[in-house]
Image (tube, rainbow, N blue to C red; front, side, top):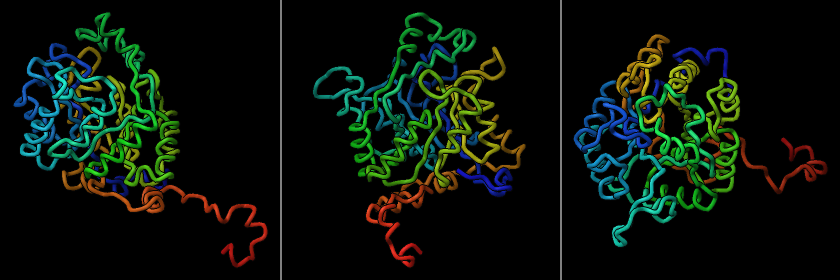
Length: 356
């Protein structure tokens, strides 16, 4: 991605799209007063976040007892309620879920491809489903301090040990089939990318025709197998992005604020919320709404406006798909594929006019 002399001026930047993740599936309801449980509470939280300035909602669903839901019907009901309550919001379902097959009457088999692909069958369909790229370690405890997890389940040995050894599986076969099904359902794939290596994987998937849509992605700087919150990592990732990527900065705990501030200044977009961070100042809790309000203040101090719902849909290119590999590369700002019929060997003997 290239920058011009005026790229840091707000009039050359898109309005800021704020993505919020308020449902915090990694935490238990007892960990925070700001984690909603019932449908009514979850929907009201979405309304509050929208009113504060967020236009993208990262969706997870809980059971009545507060545990994370793996019930397709509950997800469908949640999406239906959200469509009515916040019709302008971009609904983005977290892709790290497998659904419990009703006919088997058993708990979901974590990482079962068949139950994970059911995300493409959600009704009403969300605008996006997130896709983590490549099988990776996801040791979030590497960056979380004792203060970060104070008073939460993550501070307990059994939970801390589980999250230390956590990984997610996203191999080539799964990713290709998942993107195919999401596209067939009119759902945009939102890529969750942890480092430049994973970005290269996405580019190869595009160049080989397995994804034909806009590159809308988060840089997930959570350490433990992903990039850490180092500005050098951020700039290296930005250097590797194609020019027209829609790029959101995502961090972990209090690193969210400085990373997102850099992202706002450079014209990118941001993610906040209880799923990533529960803190304001050191030792002081901050709600999802308070975190959104902070992003709004920072952006407005830089004279960069906050995206409306309609602007966010335009910026995220919701509903846009491309008809060919060539169009996908061109619209995202990547170089075209090499013309295999006109390689270096052919260039040496080609007539001059053929090179023009």
